[in-house]
Amino acid sequence: MNWQKSSLKKLTTFKIGGKIDHFVEPRDESELRDALLFAKCKRKKVFVIGAGSNILAPDRGLSGVIIRLKAADFSKISVKGNVIECGSGVYLNRFLSAAKNSGLTGAEFLVGIPGMIGGALIMNAGGWGKGIGGLVKDIRIMDYNGRVKIIKKSIAGFSYRNSKLNRYIILGARFILKKGKKSAISATIKKYLDYRRKSQDNSLPNVGCIFKNPAQGSAGMFIDACGLKGKRCAGAVVSERHANFILNARGAKAKDVLKLIDLVSHKVKEEFGIKLEPEIRIWK
Image 1: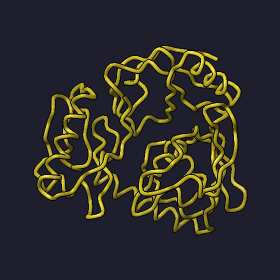
Image 2: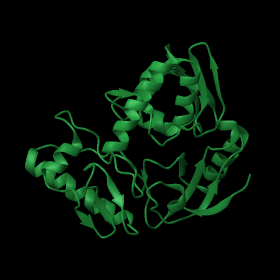
Image 3: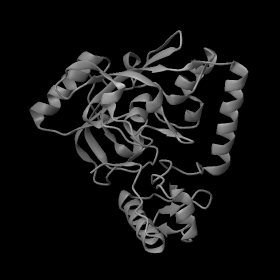
């Protein structure tokens, strides 16, 4: 197993975060267990990362053990009938392509989301009122003592942009989709992707939507109504295109993003009486 030093800036789409001394990409489950044992012996906190597309990492770095499940053993995918089985290191676009190529429908809403299966399950990623948890048959997990088991969907506790899976390490999952026509699947994917490209702002490093949508409507709509588009805190700025995006415009630090998150939250609460809840994972 190849332990490395690295930077959270290199591992996250926000391009923010300090140095880390213990970073590893296990080749298989045995090496993953070894990494967990190392962390336990050293009394280090374990952080599991995938694409790093939903994480705000601290400027000071982390003294814990950072594990990324990206190796081939965690990136397998297979289709049997209307069931897709894949590892936690499979990117969502690859999962969606496998579904489309097999004539399976139901996952089109995931198009354009830059994460991997593991992270998507933990946050129940999705769009248009749907989440990936709705497709799950079962999930293969490892606990932090190295024990592997398969858990049912009901135990995962899926809710809007959340789950109870962060107490486990996701190894993989099986998903149930429906048979469909490839032409119709492709058309739906194009429709969703066109909308994302027009409405979202990926011109600069970011982590997608910062806040969950409250029950009253779109978080971006309330932020925009407060006149906060373009609001800046040092290198971090609220997108002019999508008010629920914060961009790393000029060497932003985590502290800049956090200040902007606090400011936006305070303004929306003050103007509308709505408490916005972060959708992203804020590592400390």
